[in-house]
Image: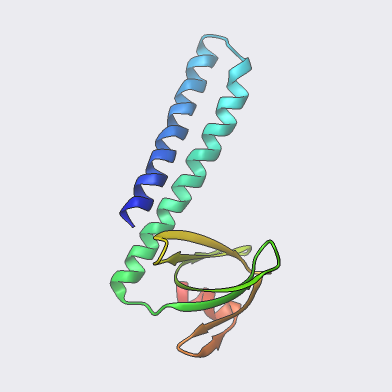
Length: 133
Protein backbone atom coordinates (compact mmCIF):
# COMPACT_ATOMS: atom_id res chain seq x y z
CA UNK A 1 0.00 0.00 0.00
CA UNK A 2 2.97 2.26 0.61
CA UNK A 3 3.89 2.22 -3.10
CA UNK A 4 0.35 3.25 -4.06
CA UNK A 5 0.49 6.18 -1.62
CA UNK A 6 3.83 7.25 -3.10
CA UNK A 7 2.58 6.98 -6.70
CA UNK A 8 -0.60 8.96 -6.14
CA UNK A 9 1.18 11.45 -3.87
CA UNK A 10 3.71 12.22 -6.61
CA UNK A 11 0.91 12.75 -9.13
CA UNK A 12 -0.83 15.09 -6.68
CA UNK A 13 2.38 17.10 -6.24
CA UNK A 14 2.81 17.29 -10.04
CA UNK A 15 -0.77 18.55 -10.36
CA UNK A 16 -0.22 21.24 -7.72
CA UNK A 17 3.04 22.25 -9.41
CA UNK A 18 1.18 22.64 -12.71
CA UNK A 19 -1.41 24.83 -10.99
CA UNK A 20 1.37 27.01 -9.56
CA UNK A 21 2.92 27.16 -13.04
CA UNK A 22 -0.47 28.24 -14.41
CA UNK A 23 -0.70 31.09 -11.89
CA UNK A 24 2.83 32.15 -12.78
CA UNK A 25 1.94 32.15 -16.51
CA UNK A 26 -1.21 34.16 -15.83
CA UNK A 27 0.74 36.79 -13.89
CA UNK A 28 3.33 37.00 -16.69
CA UNK A 29 0.49 37.27 -19.26
CA UNK A 30 1.49 34.07 -21.06
CA UNK A 31 -2.11 33.07 -21.71
CA UNK A 32 -1.21 30.21 -24.05
CA UNK A 33 -0.22 28.00 -21.12
CA UNK A 34 -2.97 29.04 -18.70
CA UNK A 35 -5.76 26.81 -20.05
CA UNK A 36 -3.58 23.76 -20.68
CA UNK A 37 -1.74 23.96 -17.37
CA UNK A 38 -4.91 24.68 -15.45
CA UNK A 39 -6.83 21.81 -17.00
CA UNK A 40 -4.06 19.24 -16.59
CA UNK A 41 -3.22 20.47 -13.09
CA UNK A 42 -6.82 20.28 -11.89
CA UNK A 43 -7.25 16.85 -13.45
CA UNK A 44 -4.12 15.40 -11.85
CA UNK A 45 -4.82 16.96 -8.46
CA UNK A 46 -8.45 15.87 -8.24
CA UNK A 47 -7.84 12.36 -9.53
CA UNK A 48 -4.89 11.66 -7.28
CA UNK A 49 -6.60 13.17 -4.24
CA UNK A 50 -9.62 10.90 -4.84
CA UNK A 51 -7.37 7.82 -5.04
CA UNK A 52 -5.53 8.83 -1.87
CA UNK A 53 -8.88 9.16 -0.04
CA UNK A 54 -9.92 5.71 -1.31
CA UNK A 55 -6.60 4.24 -0.16
CA UNK A 56 -7.22 5.69 3.30
CA UNK A 57 -10.70 4.14 3.39
CA UNK A 58 -9.27 0.79 2.29
CA UNK A 59 -6.61 1.02 4.98
CA UNK A 60 -9.25 1.60 7.68
CA UNK A 61 -11.32 -1.30 6.26
CA UNK A 62 -8.28 -3.57 6.54
CA UNK A 63 -7.67 -2.46 10.13
CA UNK A 64 -11.33 -3.07 11.00
CA UNK A 65 -11.06 -6.56 9.54
CA UNK A 66 -13.78 -6.23 6.92
CA UNK A 67 -14.26 -9.32 4.80
CA UNK A 68 -13.20 -9.45 1.18
CA UNK A 69 -15.74 -9.38 -1.60
CA UNK A 70 -15.52 -11.58 -4.67
CA UNK A 71 -16.55 -9.45 -7.66
CA UNK A 72 -17.55 -11.09 -10.95
CA UNK A 73 -17.46 -8.48 -13.70
CA UNK A 74 -17.13 -7.91 -17.41
CA UNK A 75 -14.36 -5.50 -18.37
CA UNK A 76 -14.05 -3.13 -21.35
CA UNK A 77 -12.99 -5.95 -23.66
CA UNK A 78 -16.09 -7.96 -22.65
CA UNK A 79 -13.97 -10.57 -20.91
CA UNK A 80 -15.55 -11.98 -17.78
CA UNK A 81 -13.19 -11.90 -14.80
CA UNK A 82 -13.26 -12.10 -11.05
CA UNK A 83 -11.27 -10.31 -8.37
CA UNK A 84 -11.16 -10.51 -4.62
CA UNK A 85 -11.28 -6.95 -3.28
CA UNK A 86 -11.58 -5.06 -0.04
CA UNK A 87 -14.37 -2.46 -0.47
CA UNK A 88 -13.02 1.09 -0.42
CA UNK A 89 -15.91 3.18 -1.70
CA UNK A 90 -18.71 3.55 -4.20
CA UNK A 91 -20.74 6.12 -6.04
CA UNK A 92 -23.58 5.90 -8.54
CA UNK A 93 -21.31 4.93 -11.45
CA UNK A 94 -18.41 3.01 -9.91
CA UNK A 95 -17.50 0.62 -7.14
CA UNK A 96 -13.94 1.02 -5.85
CA UNK A 97 -12.10 -1.91 -4.36
CA UNK A 98 -8.59 -2.39 -3.03
CA UNK A 99 -6.75 -5.26 -4.71
CA UNK A 100 -4.39 -6.79 -2.12
CA UNK A 101 -2.27 -8.59 -4.73
CA UNK A 102 -1.67 -5.41 -6.79
CA UNK A 103 -1.70 -3.07 -3.78
CA UNK A 104 -3.82 -0.47 -5.60
CA UNK A 105 -7.39 0.70 -6.07
CA UNK A 106 -9.48 -0.63 -8.97
CA UNK A 107 -12.68 0.96 -10.23
CA UNK A 108 -15.51 -1.36 -11.32
CA UNK A 109 -18.43 0.08 -13.28
CA UNK A 110 -21.76 -0.98 -11.78
CA UNK A 111 -22.99 -1.86 -15.28
CA UNK A 112 -20.19 -4.39 -15.73
CA UNK A 113 -20.57 -6.13 -12.37
CA UNK A 114 -22.46 -9.38 -12.76
CA UNK A 115 -22.55 -10.40 -9.10
CA UNK A 116 -20.82 -9.79 -5.79
CA UNK A 117 -20.26 -12.51 -3.21
CA UNK A 118 -19.41 -12.13 0.47
CA UNK A 119 -18.82 -15.42 2.28
CA UNK A 120 -20.68 -17.25 -0.54
CA UNK A 121 -23.71 -14.98 -0.06
CA UNK A 122 -24.76 -12.89 -3.06
CA UNK A 123 -25.10 -9.14 -2.47
CA UNK A 124 -27.03 -6.55 -4.43
CA UNK A 125 -25.86 -3.03 -5.24
CA UNK A 126 -27.87 -1.65 -2.32
CA UNK A 127 -26.33 -4.16 0.10
CA UNK A 128 -22.83 -3.17 -1.01
CA UNK A 129 -23.64 0.55 -0.68
CA UNK A 130 -25.04 0.01 2.85
CA UNK A 131 -21.98 -1.95 3.94
CA UNK A 132 -19.72 0.93 2.93
CA UNK A 133 -21.50 3.49 5.10
